Amino acid sequence: MPRPDARVPLLDAAERLFAERGIATVSDRQVAEAAGNSNHSAVRYYFAGRTGLVEALLERHRAAVEPAQQRMFAQSDSLLGDVRALVIPLTDSFAELPTPSWRARFLQQALSDPTTTELMRAGTGRFPTSGRIVVSAAERLAHLDRGVVEARARLTVHVVITACAEIEERARVSGEPPPWRAAGAFLCDAVGGLLQAPVTAAFHA
Image 1: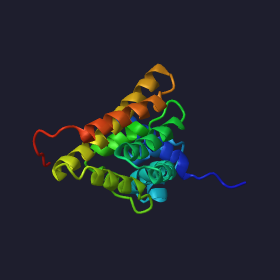
Image 2: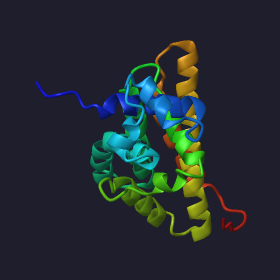
Image 3: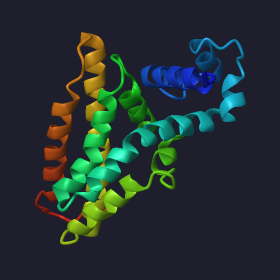
Image 4: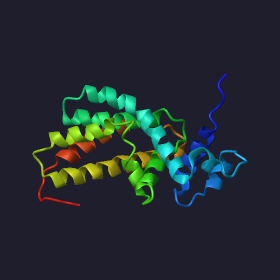
């Protein structure tokens, strides 16, 4: 029987604590204690520090969505197809987590924390499909001002992650399973409309 991966309890504990309290306010020692690890230097030992821990959490998330994104993107022939290839694997991956879960709220924290924002944008080497989907969607919107498209793409990330974090939190409070399938369909429609909305003025930010 293979030995359990000692990193998993640390990842699970960090994901929960970061989601609940924010990334900057949680110490490595608190992560180790929450994971039941008596070695208070466990985060440094297994991940070489806080940055490595956050990178491992993001890699675990990307690994969960990459295969489905590849399959759906290979079948996409429209902007909505691209949007679905980006969003549905995300909400489906959340649906596979136990209730309560913390992944969407961790991603929201990582997106808003200045020390981890760049980590959210990096790491596409092993998991390139989301980047390819974004490029494809941008090409389908080539008739729009480039600055508008880029700003809407950034807004899309915030809309999707924030919505998923709110759904996850409501499920934690209610104890009911989150409606991820319905949420995925709703978000695809909303994002499709956002990306294709009429432009009244060019925007660069």
